[in-house]
Length: 157
Ligand SMILES: [Fe+2]
Image (cartoon, rainbow, N blue to C red; front, side, top):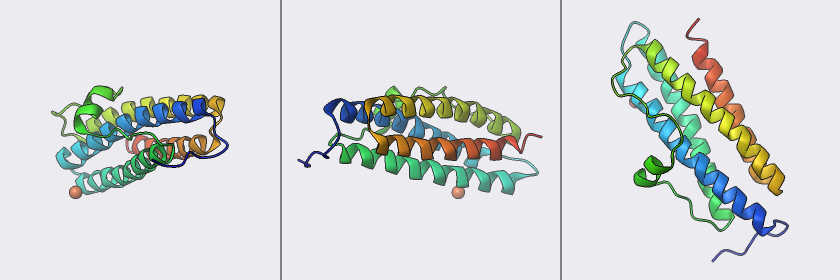
């Protein structure tokens, strides 16, 4: 058993574990949706969006690892199995019948916007609980999600 981090209340620790696991499930679901788009997109701008989706996937993968490892540092259990993610994700189910780049981008933008909103709520919740380090993690993640949302939206003009 890990030695508890000093200077964190039990409430801060528990709040962070719960917020991190909730956003972990959404990030894993979103990362899979991005791969679904990466594999199935077709059309004249194929290579640009195919590669864009892989860049977005890499950014989400980095968040996923940081969320899960922070849970471990807080002496929690990171929950990232397919079964638990399917139960725990709060994002709208990603369709499997899309092929047009614009349709994939619109579907992903909708979910990125939702994810960004929930990351900002997690910043507030962990800030209120008093875990500045987890606040920092969620702040970095939301900044990355906002930037990737902007990248995708710029393809729609
Ligand atoms: Fe690939």
